Image (cartoon, one colour):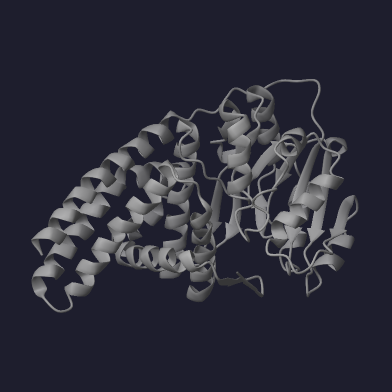
Length: 372
């Protein structure tokens, strides 16, 4: 018991320093002044879609309502072998280009769909989102502004979940929000590179310069992550996190525990392909920290003294995370979720350990497919 307690205290010290760094870097991100340019770039929005008939029409309506000149905006939907009426819904919208992905027996359909979209794109700036997302009216305008101001080679922008009022919804919303905060802090510091494919942008010339997804096209997920890292190798000073509320894109949380776990396993499966470095070290620290807490909780079922240590650890973990989580929650206007934060810790601990372990195997189901 003494050794396990000592390990937990040591990990808590390191974990606390990590979170202090995240808070500092998140707070240091500033929104650049908008550029007033007479010349606006042609923007191509790429939307890979599979079985999204319930969502794609809402997204396309929002895209056509953008406060950006329609003459400077191209929208391309790439239908990924949908088994519903996704393509039929797209054809009801004027001015939208519909492509159909014909490639089969591949492992990364989304990367192939995006490559197809980029090859047809006329725009100078490529903007990517998902078919189940909802941007605000100034989304493109904000992305273009930071692109012009910073001459950005890659722009990661914020994503938020809209969720059901239940414990699954609260857990996802808080967890996803914290991941967004870590994404912004890591990109600002330049040593912890993550992004989300629901809201990112890059110049087409940059995509071509890094040869797109070549080298990572056999990996099922990670269309955002692996492209970011390839671009960062060539243009390390031109990676930007757009910390703007007007640039937030919203997407729906998973409706079932099974869907949530499969999604998180999909995300975790990328970690086996990460290069050794700070990101792997951080992921290992977070997983190990939660593993020790889970072991204490399970041991507490047999001996009360372990349960007391776990309860102390539960409190310590909450205290260490509070400042960073509350700061990020303020940006996303999700401070009401903080009332659930303490009580969600056991669920967060368990899911982090389980999803991380299962992600090493790399198999999961997504969009009706079994992915290896």
